[in-house]
Image 1 (cartoon, rainbow, N blue to C red):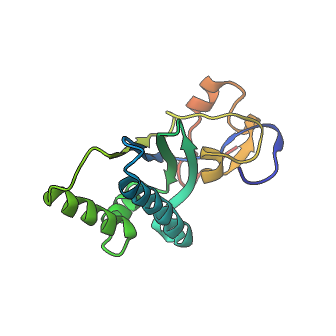
Image 2: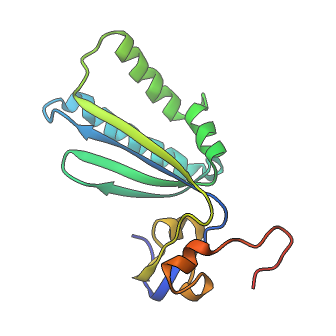
Length: 172
């Protein structure tokens, strides 16, 4: 986790819809290193490439693992349009990786050694809330900024109800 802890209660300063992508892999056969290691390295390279090119739209990533077998990343994107544009961009490493996976599948290469997955969510404003106690900016707050809890409400129900001021209006 980056940065110093903010010694207070804070919340994410997200406005509008929030785009979240969960993406990962599962090692089904540990001995098939020649198949799962390239998948792991490909994910790390995609993350490095995205970090070098912020215009692609990745705002923040959090690397997680749930077990020695499963690895995943939570990503926060500027918009679903930027996420889709990256996923289909011919110049992006992601495009090369999927082309390789599709060629292997068509060629009948062994399958089942490594699993890959993703889930994408567009969360409408008013359908998310967050709280961080004595934490540096993390997750949604790292992606969208961190504000004192009072800016959005002390209780979860208040943070869920928070809406951005319409364009042209000043927020209180």
